[in-house]
Length: 302
Image 1: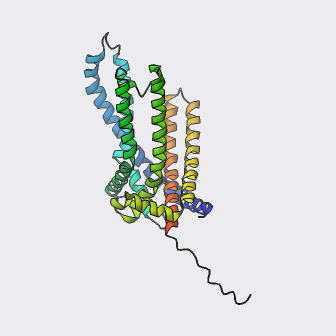
Image 2: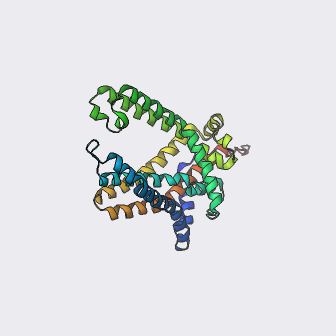
Image 3: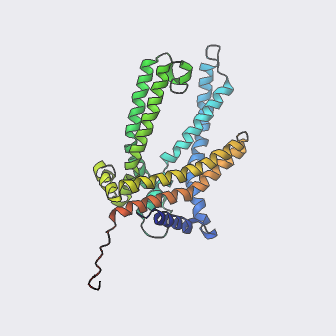
């Protein structure tokens, strides 16, 4: 596999799709596909939590027994609203639907970004495959949650959040084993999930995308070494962008407006980066079906 050639092809595809003034409207529309569901969910969830849930919780928890204040509860509910709004990226998967079209499209040009219902349903096909491959991690989390509640019933909900407060070596070891097992599982599952997602777009079948033996056969054709190296390259590029964001966030850590602008800028920049990654992964997938060239040269002249 020519990794440099695949990276160059994915870069050229992304550059021709975004980096021109006349292509800016597409970039902005895809950015809105990201942000509008988040902002809409943030507005709705904030109103519901602040107007409906806050008075009830204030009546129950604002007393000498619990030590909460109305302001602290309002802040906690606003954090919850932010979490709910971010989850709307999953529940309104327009970006996932566009990634589906990119991986499915083997032509040079960018696919159509209209037809919201088509994007929505294609995005949910992607989500179903993601949920399937996330099952092992979900099961591990549930098992460890039961272990924590069994070992430390007095700690309640906050066991996994503040383990060191328990002052227990067992709690630390259990937590470390949980983090390590989840990380290893995530790496292993991701090997199949990435190809499974591209396979979904090419086969159009959820069953094919979740057939582990079939996915393993595709990876074998690519070559396990080349495939893993491709994922490492993707991870390095993604971590580089994320590191830049975190560094900037530290600089503007005490400026709320700057953080919001920075987050918006990050999402805006992530649009072509996501497209690059999807195209790159699709090109890696294509190498499994390239027919090797045979050398039919005539050596009679030697």
